[in-house]
Image 1: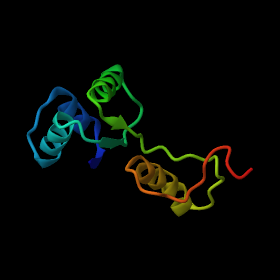
Image 2: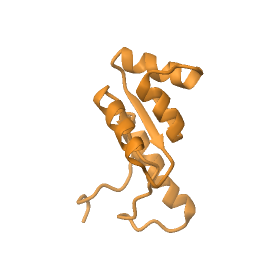
Image 3: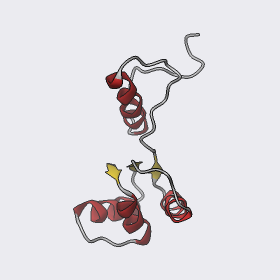
Image 4: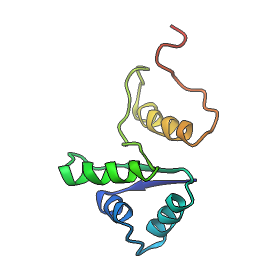
Length: 106
């Protein structure tokens, strides 16, 4: 498994199989071996090229998790807002995370 914070350039290289550095090579191997690849994209707005690259990586078995905070839990402060992204990535990674779940505990 690999979790990678990535720019749209890194996403494009992964989507097209260009392995010109350690991150893109690791992502290439993880997809090849059918292991879990989580890409935390950080750029907006998205162009159609970005969306198509996300589609390509998803079809290859990767998971796209944009670094967009959620506000369902009513986080207070910047650390709590950032924690919503971190918790989501940890959850996708298979860790048992005690975090807000929509519809639970209401």
